Image (tube, rainbow, N blue to C red; front, side):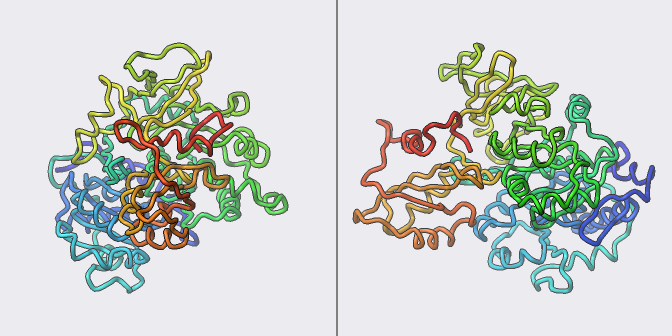
Length: 518
């Protein structure tokens, strides 16, 4: 089925074919060549029988190829599914199977991640290895060779299911199993007001700060490209290199979790002063709350006009924004609702909280929220209150309408901008032959915002060595989910109904802090 309207990348290419589209190290690719690359990628997908609405999963660190894959999937009407390259093999298999991936595209560096599981993923029709350098494993096809031989004609989507969602980002659930959040294809009708609020322009240059499998780094990159901007790819984050890339390519915009920027502002003055970061005018801050001290350092050591903090989530999109002039006068705030978004607070009895400084669970009404949890509509429905939706955060607002996130109703940990769900880790811990019970939660960490911490009880009443605990967990979990510390207790406190009293366990670690999130 032909697309109803011309593709946005093709339109930009026709208008300015020689403008730089993507920079990845020494590779500087103009729009003409990038669009041709995307078309080749899309036509290989079509040759594999990919139809509109089918799932195309990719996994790999940031690269030109990853950027092209996302556009190619969009052009053929496929649902693009990014997968975390740090998942353990069994975690990766679950995501691949759960999303019903038709094809899997993987960076050659991810071969070990997929080697042991590819034969068990029965729904996958084809495995494609990119950045292969002739080293694609025998159970896959060399995507680079196939795309080099493919036509550069604009791909034509096959099938009619073109509203299934351009991406499906996996975010863990409280049951311990990841959930696919299906994003809508239709742009928000308020997108123009949002773009105007931040001030993005067609000449913006976006730097990929953080992995593109996250919804926000990927989403903001695609937005900048849709407006006609360019992208600078940083494969592995390095603080000094981040400053170098900003100066060299006159980067104007990026998205960042707190941890990367903390590493930038904590560089020695003699290192930071070698680079001019004045071109950065729109740095979107989120993925985890930015501590006020970090904001102060950014304003003092980078610049005082570029920091836009947003509150949002994979499910609900961007909901509130704190503009640069308010950063220093509203410590702890995540701003006011952006155009087109309505935010309400409700108490535990379902009553709307309207008075200033009174906390309530935060609900959002917006046409930019996700469509559903894939294969789990009941979980989706549980987060709804009429047309409003929540991800379980507790907030209050001041008398000027600025919101402050003060707690999470659920137990999610955000470490370095990555969502970590304790139930998954607890299930692994209690599988240890010595551990009888476990509770996992986040504790303050200067670098990561929060660190994963565990409380355990054992069958024989003796503690487990931390190193042994980490070794056991690493066999079953991605490294960033492994508890960095633990304590032994004779009995984990629970309510009368049997629920772990995590608020009671967390309290000593967060005492004296106004917020219970990192």
